[in-house]
Length: 345
Image 1: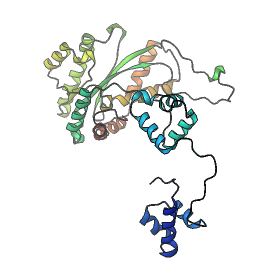
Image 2 (image 1 turned 180 degrees about the vertical axis):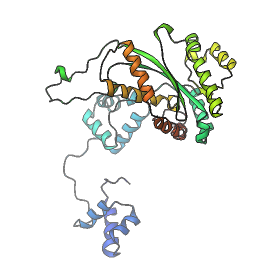
Image 3 (image 1 turned 90 degrees about the vertical axis):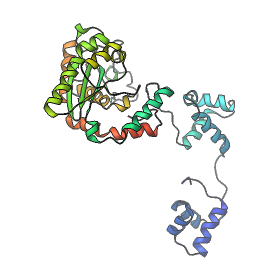
Image 4 (image 1 turned 120 degrees about the horizontal axis):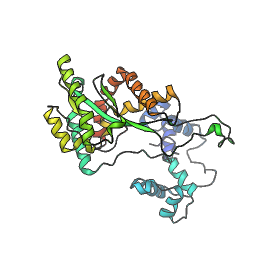
């Protein structure tokens, strides 16, 4: 029952009968009826069971219209993106103004909020994600520890978080309150990997390597992966499986053949699944670290950016990696709960 709903005359009379004639306590009435303590208290204190006429202007929109509005908003992406005014025009032919639409949606917990950005998931990929999550949901921590997680990220100068300033209402355009936006920020790619709570190679993509493709990936990344997996086996007797996403250079025939020749076991990874890859969270940690230590320099030099990124990778705590690994069962459960679609991760 909605806690703020006004009770009917019959409901109020029931409460009064239980209290005055049945001599039940208010907690007992709450347990028996399911009404809130505030509804019960109000009914008892009222001079009579009859509902007094409500003061104020009655709602313009009816309960049925509100339900129709909610159904309409929830049924498609296009409707979710409509403004309150557009909803009024499309659904009620402008007979209800946008404030009425807004207030009706507010009463049901709706607000206009920034949409989350996620990669597209087709029906086929949805099923692959769901199957992967179901297959791995009961894995132990020791099993998760056998995966070498990898990914790359693009690192740029300037702020990573949203920037807040302290200002008066009329200082919006004061130069000290402006965050400058550059059309082309300087940036570079960084690739990294980890297993358990142990970092593997972290590689800043050098200028002379050119663009990232099958050949540069095989030349500059896979040898490091191969060496690290072999060293881990020799030192810890732990056989790692290599996780990489479905980037073109990763799934190219030459890359697959190279991995096979190196006898590197590769995780069968579902497409469009950054939420299942714990290393994705490392990139935010590193970018926050760079921002906190080196400020908001918009265009650091190549040498500076390389130093910042490599330092951030070195400072990434092992305890944080362990926390990410511990989240894997929850990530799988979230994908299952979403039936293979997007999750909060």
